[in-house]
Image 1 (cartoon, rainbow, N blue to C red):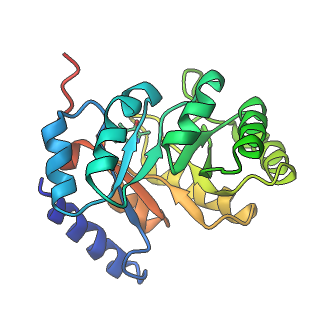
Image 2: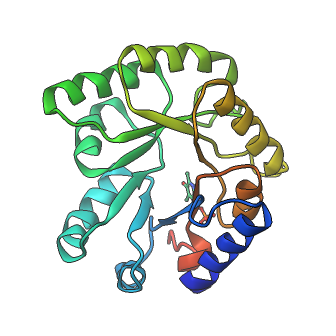
Length: 217
Ligand SMILES: *Cc1c(COP(=O)(O)O)cnc(C)c1O
């Protein structure tokens, strides 16, 4: 689907919910996509992109950033502690802060480098064993730690379990964000971004609806 169609659908949902135009930002998720598709979206003028792996992003974005001004890059996948410094050099926003050790590592490197990306805390709203994210009942402690470390956390992120109604998870995430005084909500993907906007998403992460199916072969 053309980028402009996705942008229209976002604008319509913002209007339907009486939200300000642009209050839900589109992250174009370019992981695994052929470079020419990514370049095409850059050439259309879009600048906000998401990747889920540090290594993959490091392989393509330094070149693309040299060719196109004003790129804003978001890490939306899990972050291993030993890749934190590299991720902090590459990404403008990290959506996957989910444990005390990672928060402490980010704070230490931010102090050394004099720079910290904007941050979201990922919440495992479905309490799935295999999924990244802090459990809801451990969120209080992680938020308190991030605040004590002066980390620039601006919101919460979730990936609802497949096969469940995502709106319930979006509503839960919105409630948790409100409880903790956060304005940012990173939620909604190709199949459910309108429902996420209805529940207050400030960032939607849309990949295959823009670029086509990912070919992992
Ligand atoms: C891949 C991915 C997306 C985009 O998924 P689509 O269904 O292709 O829109 C969004 N969020 C995260 C965390 C992802 O890993």
